[in-house]
Image 1 (cartoon, rainbow, N blue to C red):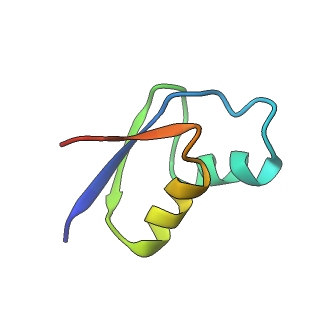
Image 2: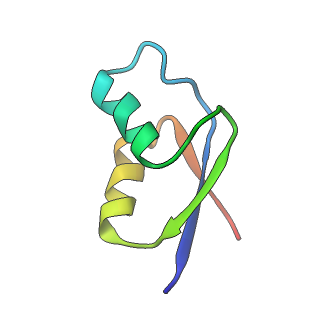
Length: 59
């Protein structure tokens, strides 16, 4: 199955607890880290909810 890469580019300080938990659920540990997940609707939805904090990395 296809994969999707995302990079955390903006701090979650000042944003809601739910958005911070979404960042953690995606597997991010530090700012500017990159994670790779299978391209599923669930992962796409999580990335869309924190679109202002992460960017998709082109493979």
